Amino acid sequence: MANMKKRIAAALTAATPTIGLTISAVAAKAPDESVRVSSYKGNTLKVGERSGLIVGPSGADYTVISSNPDTVAVEQVLTFWVAVAKGSGIAEITASNSVGECGSMTLTVGPAAPTSLEAPASGDSVGLMDNLEIRQEMIRLINQTRKDNGVPELPVNEALMNAAQACSNRRYTWHHAPEESQAAADAGYPYGFGDNLTVFTGTTDAARRAVDNWINSPGHFETMINSRCDCIGVGVTQHDGITYCYMFVGIPNSVNFYA
Image (cartoon, rainbow, N blue to C red):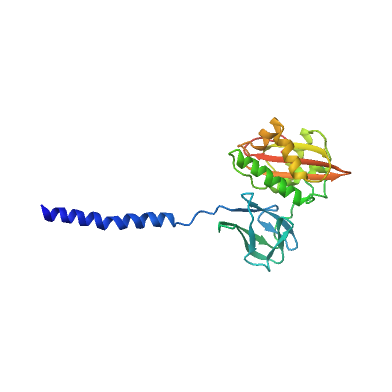
C-alpha cells in the first residue's frame, strides 16, 4: 500500500510541469492578424496608378511597407498612406503598429488590371479622387464612432467612394434619392445602401464637423452605426467656402431598384 501511494504521488508530481508547459504554449500562440489593410482601388492597379490605403483599427499609428517597392512603392502623404504602382508584378503591403500587431494585403500591378471607373453617375468624370485626406479622416472618425458603439468598423468600397464623391460634387443641399441610387448603381455597387448628407459653411476641420453633425442627429447617427452595413464610401466637395459631405454605407443582400 505504501508503494502504491508513492507511485501516485510521483505521477502527480510528474504531471504538474506538463500542465504548466501546456498553459505556456497556449499563451505564446501567435495572435491572428488584428490590423486590416485595404486599398481604395481594390487589389489590382495599372502602372502609374495611385491608390489610397486604409489601415485599421483607427486611432493608432502604423508603419506601412511594401515587399517589392519596384512594383508598388508606399508613400506617406500628410496623415495617410498611398500605394504607387511602379511596374508589373505582385507586392505585399504590410502595416504594423507599435505593439507588433500587423496585417497585410496583396496588390497586383499590370496592364491587364481593370480600368477604374471614371464616370460613376450622370457623366461625372472629374474629382473622384478629390479631398482624400479629409475623406480618410471622415472614415477614421466614422469607424471610431462605430467601434465606440459596439459595431464593427467598415472597410472602404471603391464604388461607394466614387458614388459618394459624385453626389457631393453636385453640391446637393438635401437628399435626392433617385439620383443617389443611380449614382451607386452606375458606380457598380449592386445592393441597397444607407446615406448621410451634411452641408455647412467653412472648410476647416471638415471631417470632424461632418461626423459631429451626424452624431448629433438621431436619424443620421443610426445610419452611421447600422450593424447591417459592411462597407463605406465618403465624398467631400468644398466650393466657395461651403463644404458638402456624403457618407454611403453598403447593406449587403438588400435591393437598389436602380441597379
